[in-house]
Image 1: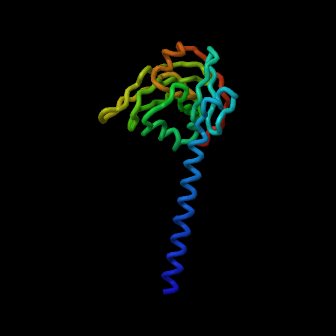
Image 2: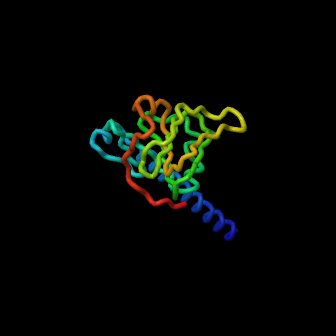
Length: 173
């Protein structure tokens, strides 16, 4: 009986640690989303990059700077606020491509060169309805890809050559 009791205590302890970790992870997600008062005060939540458009408008972007983050992208999201997106960082310029597999929302996709200028645009890319999914890309050398809420291109009058401002990051591959 002593051995079974010890095993039960150990299992309970491990499960408790996992549940605590999941709870903290959920809190991190909640607090990484800026609320309106944070935006007014200029407070930028941890983990989001601020992209400044030529008009002065701001987009808050999640960072995809590792292979696994770039692979996941915005899959399984049911909505995306108009001031949000995901910024993909790549280790070197290339003809990077995107597909909408497991995406539930339409997106505007922008490819940026190493000078952070738009070199390719895809407006209102629809979610993939069936395999094979369409693949969107550029023949130019992009260093970054921005996935943003559908309508971002039109709302902010983004065109080829538009330049963004944001911090450089090291890519973790």
